[in-house]
Length: 71
Image (cartoon, rainbow, N blue to C red; front, side, top):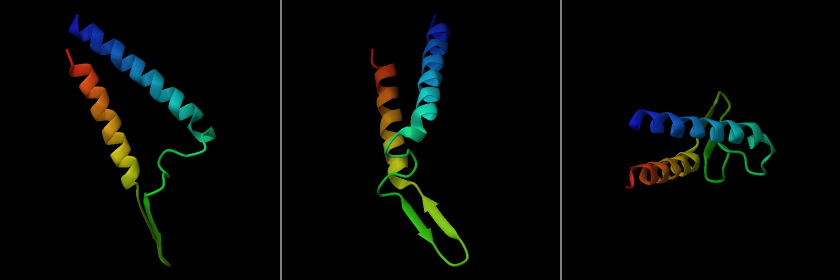
């Protein structure tokens, strides 16, 4: 029964991720280009580090894992 529940949760997570990716381009704030992300452009190259996006993803994943493991 544990494997079945895991597969159901993984399927729902994939569906939600697919919907977010599909409608993500139409949102006013694009995921991956949030305010606070570091972007530096020089003459010979550029550097981009999405620090705020990483923090947000970490918080969301931590919340989901906490909700799944709470019994």
